[in-house]
Image 1 (tube, one colour):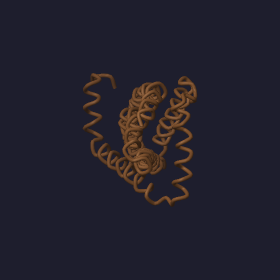
Image 2 (cartoon, one colour):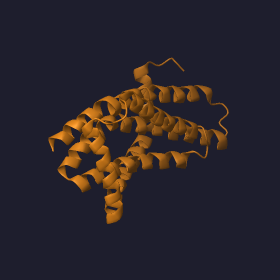
Image 3 (tube, one colour):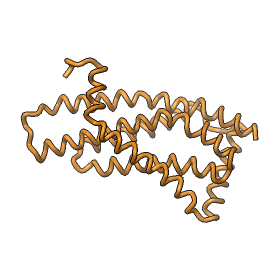
Image 4 (cartoon, helix red, strand yellow):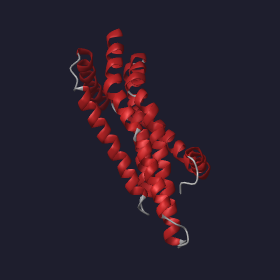
Length: 212
């Protein structure tokens, strides 16, 4: 299991799962597009209600009346860690494959809807706000979700082949160890993404809000 170096392991992983990476990336992109389209399907009342809550939140940010950065960090990290943990568990289940795909699609929908709503309601200020409030942590989170989603789907497919093709000669435990190790390694990026969301984004948001 350890006869290859880290670089070789990464190269083998990418070569083995490149078709899954492509599929997951396209699925995520479709989710983002769908989320942006959903914004236009909201009626005027729904848009006004959401914009009212959004205005209250931005007012608190502008006045500096937001939660402590440490609380935001812990909440964000816990949320993303639970998401990763759920996908890891689903990867261990033969029936977890469709749920993993749905979770990844929904994550894309959330990103697309958030950016789309800000731009739709606020124009150029909304674009800048989405760029500083949504995009910085997602530059880390989106690749992390794609990697974890691909690893989970790949492991789930191996589970299916192992169960139904009965390849008993294939050692399964080393595959499980590599799968879990990959999830843990990528999970380390959650700390950086949560730190950006907690300590950097509020400052940038305040600067943008005060400039308009």
